[in-house]
Length: 292
Length: 178
Image 1 (cartoon, one colour):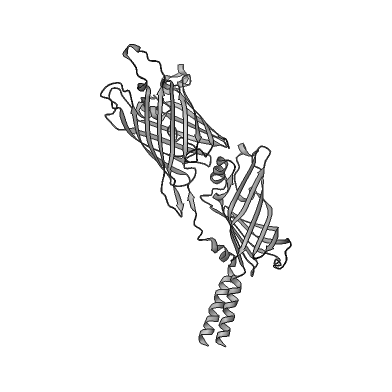
Image 2: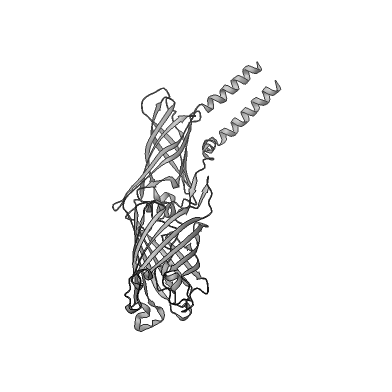
């Protein structure tokens, strides 16, 4: 009899608890629903500032990207502090799948055509599958079409071609702060002297901090390991900028000491110097078109 | 005597659990019909449960599971409007005011009263839903309006012409007996 009494009491008391927040209890059925939560929007667009970010366009989205630099700020009032000069790149990026991107572009610097593939190898996620970082692989090739001023020296088509291999590793630490590191290997078929290396290694680091839902400040720095470019003076590329998002457009405004607009060019060829005012104002404008 | 009592106790608790209905693939769709742009998104993984003995209804929505026509819209929805990293779920907890007639095959109009929670802001909601009993399943569908203002979702003036102030929400659940 004692057991029955205690059982009844137990049943009644648990019933009482149940009645108190029965709706929460019903909701509790779904507490263990584990889904993989993929991190989205680590960066606002496919460029950190000058270089690639881990963002890919969605499947069958086309991004039209105009990048533009003015001249050096220290050219003075005569050149309107650089505004009279311009370097421009016009490019398209297309999402073959959500993880594989193909891009093409044309830069006024050295009259260069470039193309690249970007593949999202890993996606940062929490929940039923945990991954701390997003990783993209980038491979690019460019072709310089600037006229050969010394035809008597002989000039091979291969001399005009350069290659880029890059790994982008990024993590969205908080909803506002994301960081990315990017080891790069650049192969130049033609270098100025025999002492200059054809294969050049660099390590980039960058990040963004969102100051509001639609505005972020960005920074990007590429360290070129020493003794690879020796025949002329080289600087590491440093870019400071901000992203402004307005619906289908993202505007990226920045100051940089790189005159080139293509990662394949600026990582190994930056000559601008922040300390002497030899840096440039520039911007990217991206527009996304959904082709589906 | 003891055994009979225990038996009654067990049947009683069993009968409670038998009155629970649940789904994990409910549909919730919303649309914003602004003059410049029609925005529509569908979520086919909505969780819902009903406890008939208490006439309770709960709904749980993973905000990130809404699918839009344009990927960019989806990103902006999660990043800028719903801030779904911070507020991953929206919920509804409510009660049937009248119990549905389990023996009827007709569509029954039943009033539900409860609270909707979005972005941790709670608002009362009273709606009349269509309920249809099909074997051991309960089908519920209906619609209601959500005022964006009520949930402190900031819409910048630059896009205010593209998003209407009221969202029309449609839902359809097919809950199976547990």
